[in-house]
Image 1 (cartoon, helix red, strand yellow):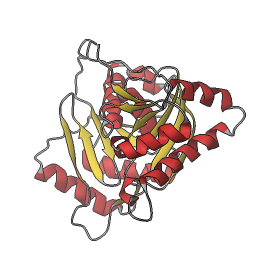
Image 2 (tube, rainbow, N blue to C red):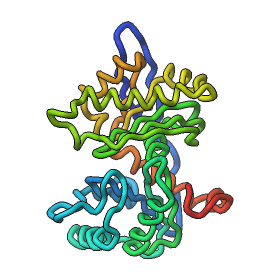
Image 3 (cartoon, one colour):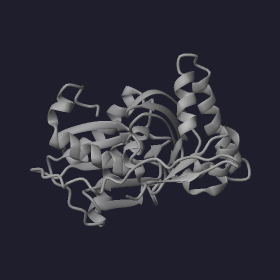
Length: 279
């Protein structure tokens, strides 16, 4: 069975590949097709089912961005932009679908509410659930079980989270990403920022044993930064650990959110026990 992650190993160490393909699972039969959304700082990605994904630049041609550093900065303009994208790409979205949306880890309630207003206006969902992008990425990489470190190095945000059996135990984030790479911000600096966030988690005495176990297993890296060998090689050197790169790092979070949407639709009682806007 093929693995969903690629291991990048440090010198003189060995690591094991983790993650398993979910292709052997039986198909899920549901009454209505669920939707997953990853509203990033530079791209809009919408999952409409296995093999049906829309991925397009967000805010291209606009005078100012509608999403910056993971936050919606202009709600009405964002609504108009999403409607335009769906219309121009002739992407039919069923009204009243269950929608699972990725959110940056440690997102403030006001930031989530702004995203909720935009997605409600555009998609008119029957239910809107939010899932931390790091948790979604772990699901999408097939590695949600056990103790795990996930680093999501995106266009404008870098997020690191410690997960235990798919739940975020602790997290850190920095407002820097691959879009910032230039003569002043290098790939090494971006990797060093990611390593610093890991060290901050390790400084907490209550988290130290979990972080140690997660490093021994090897962190999973998703996002645009995972596609850059200069970033992942530097992470191997600074962390002294095997680094696992998701097979499709740019879409791992969206894939995980899609899988969560199918699960939520198939087992609605699991979400009814929790707040409606969490997954």
